[in-house]
Image (cartoon, rainbow, N blue to C red):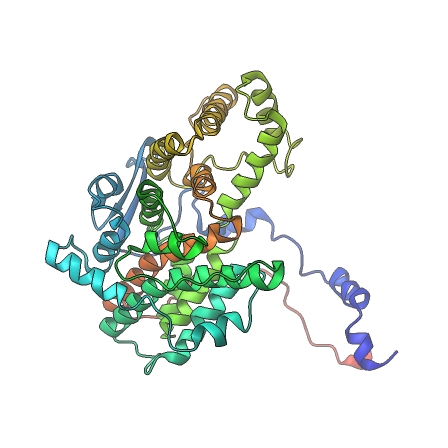
Length: 451
């Protein structure tokens, strides 16, 4: 066997891996002994505080002085404003743009400020010259999140001062990314389906008079047509996904990377990579797949007994992916309700009436209520419906392919990532470097001839 073939032999490498004693779980008691928070979580499941922020707040419970957690209705606040009020106060289909301004600058814009900011975004919709052909069409990818990372990193090469760390210059780069992300995402999808699935290549250049939500639908659909209610629902999806506090995994990743002094493009790529994970941004895809299994068995018939049986089988690890998890329910912070899910439920109800999909919506609503009833019967505690349950349904109603579910999340969340990145540059400046405790063996070196 040649040296090269030996090192390519998976069986040999597997033997090394199996012989190793280091790839075992670290005993749980050690975490308590050294007061280490496993997964950066306290023993009651709440997250360990890792920073201070003025960008946004996720409110899911009341913490009393004695450490007791009291459940409460959830809220999500951008710069102190409730997401419910921001959704209600939207002007047409430009709610996401107003949310971006609020997150980036810290206050609600006047009419003139809003129109100017809209123009600033619109003039940045287009990609650099030759970027589409050289960076996207020339190298399509099967995974759109990977492709979005590559395209984002490629923009570094089109920036005259990509490593600039000044907060204001970082803000300008961030606004440019917010404007271009929808184009990058949709074009990457069009290139993928053309190259790998031999579908007609559809390229619509973004229109400056359209909102970001309107442009996504326009660029995605071959005929470029959409209704105002469709655009309004997508605008709401973008707005409620724009940020979710500084402690979520992808935002924390962004701030950690940004604290090293790396460029904004690399920090955003790190966030996209984090969001790609099924435990984070990819959860809505899992919900959609679970519900496809359920609806395939029940044919959207409102049979509550059969629905209960399927939900119990899911919990008993006898259905779908055998994980025991009913996806789309429960949250790390929210206890009684996820405000984003509450908002989406009503918007989905409205669009389902317009699209003639009331039966499907009623099925989802019955499934939601049945899950909550079963959890209460088994554990005597409420469980919130989280944003992923209705976001997948919303995307389905909009005709958005599953491949774009998580990229759309990344497109929306770019505003939050940029806001936290800039904030961290302003108030801290220190590299984020938490400590770990070594609990392995102490060994004496043995010469190779004696091993």
